Length: 377
Image 1 (tube, helix red, strand yellow):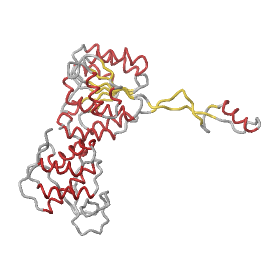
Image 2 (spheres, one colour; image 1 turned 60 degrees about the vertical axis):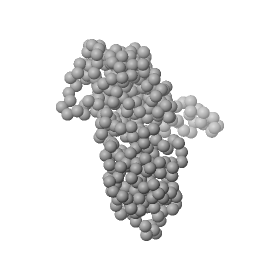
Image 3 (cartoon, one colour; image 1 turned 120 degrees about the horizontal axis):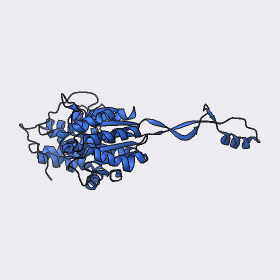
Image 4 (cartoon, helix red, strand yellow; image 1 turned 180 degrees about the vertical axis):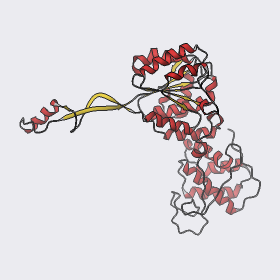
């Protein structure tokens, strides 16, 4: 295991150590870890003993005093890098005297003070989600990938509704419900006192994600597959397929709530991961095997791809036209769209454009948030 390294340029005094300890604990709490004040005090004592001249010493001092569950180690590592190292550059901590700041003086285990302490109050102003919002996925470090994973897990994909054949009870409904009216009349000596009515029910549209896993998409696919996992475990009617030189269904593999296990299983199921790409042929396979048979009918289909295709443009145009006729809406998410001066002139992308309802960027967390909004529109 390669540990994060923190080198300091000056000696830290005891007050500085307390400020670093409280600020780091505040960062861990913002990431979702439960850290009691007693643990914070032990961490400050450990830093006082080992010093902060070595990143390895600081790392293990925190691991030994602040982490109590093995499943919290990954989050601890991510927050450690974000707080102390942050992508290879010394992270500058800014402390401010504010009433809602974290303090070493509080002692209720929740990090909320009673306002009676005379100790110096400090705070850390840092939001990993904000910093990563517009950062390109291709530039993500491993720690940032974990943070992005946490942000994507909180995204709520709520596709628009469609009319259902099932009717629901509704006092203001347009159609009489004779069966329920008679049933109610049986409880009142056969007198139908109230005419029951129904209205048309609604159900959420199915969401289908087609993820390009070719070599040109590899830097983005490693993040987008985690977005697909969050969609699968977050709601029921989601299907995920990999597009490469062939079509591979990944829905079952992504169903595990353990994201690392799910992503690993999905990647192993795709034999052409980071290989070539024949988008038109793969989309045609989806149309033939799944789409036209019912999966794409009335669904929102999202294609996550840079549009580079080795196949014939005519085949891409034909299969996209078939998909567009079947689906409720076709959304294409292209990471290259964020590049200055980008135009969809690649053969595959140009052939697909006439059959796309919404064309979006897909290179950062902000663009995925826009995609989530578009799906629900």
